[in-house]
Image 1 (cartoon, rainbow, N blue to C red):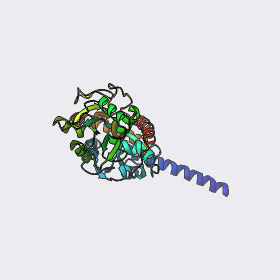
Image 2: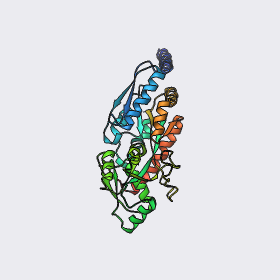
Image 3: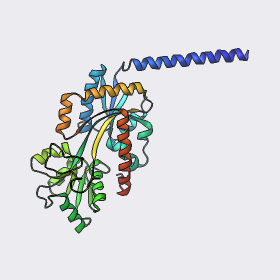
Image 4: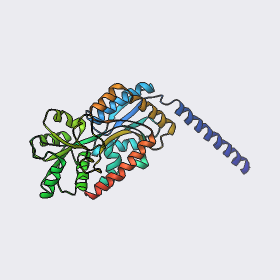
Length: 328
């Protein structure tokens, strides 16, 4: 009798497993068949939010399902990113993964409630762009060499502003400090806009700012650019050298963002989302806007984005520890 029950149990378990497997395969084949939630870990109106909405709109048309953007700001992007990590891995929650939450905050905060590599899976790189080192137009410093010379002559007197602790503004400056062997004072502000305004008021010495943010003031002669953090010169600033050209090849910084999903999301769904995003990035309006902001257009495979996140995490982990950066 026990053998009969055991045999019946095994047959039932096998049938149930096959049934569940068939249901999962059908769900993946029909994906998406309902709206997708797209989490942005920053507030409405910012650069990450506007780009997310552009991409979501194009992907929605391609996938023929609504993609609903939800802003979940806070804790340097950690709150929204954790929400993506904790969502059901069924393809119906995705989000924008940014430089800080994916490559910096694990080392900076030390007690994240998610692990970027363990709890998330990359879908695609959307874009990346350099920063530009700028000073006030009335500044006596007309080159990177001028700044380094002054910083070495009077250590701890030059200042640099940023939009807060642990962001690309500060990290770029810390990387510069490490490679130039200089000491400068960090002046963090509540936002990048506030940091830039105080630089234009000549209250701080310099700032590393995103190209799209700094360009209007550079064009208006309210800021003087000294160098950019990309490997090659920018078409928007063809007369401004790279840090490599002025003797600091390791000062290379590209602020990036891309799509991510919860770990465990089936590969077939990740591949479908990747294909849709690659197609969305072909849109001429999106491409023109990215290029006009000094950014590089993303794209590629999930594996390529994963490799970028891994290499960036290692790089910035060293900078955070060397500079002894602590969260606010």
